[in-house]
Length: 178
Ligand SMILES: [Zn+2]
Image: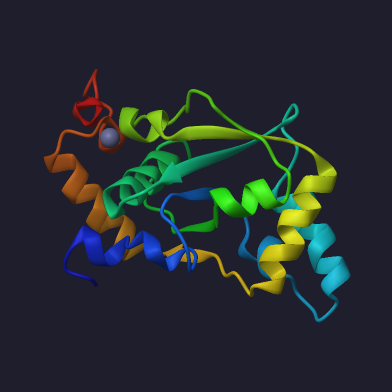
């Protein structure tokens, strides 16, 4: 296990350029990586499953630092059944969104970490723009990043010391709020 948050959640792992990075949680890794050689099928699956249209929006988080990534990961897990579940995040940049013609808006997040919530954005869902983004990222061989249970447990214990509400049911406010 990496010894620090800076190593374990280094945001430069997401893309060759940036920060910032916009991060999208995968519900299954194969939704991004595909399960065969057919790139057209893979792209279609990514459009439908990774960038699923949720009332015209696609929820993402904007990260600049390892601390942001750790809070986003722990925050996302605070909304899941198992808060120590491994998590896969796919990252892309401002420039890639812009090139695909996609619009993005700040919107409140619904995790238990107020810092993560302030980093929440929505991509306005546009199937043509989403397909352009997916095609570009497949072209670049962009990979999702997996945080294992041990990474999540490490972040959890660090953030518990910092008073992050995503790590406990007993705090009424999140000290991450600043
Ligand atoms: Zn927090």
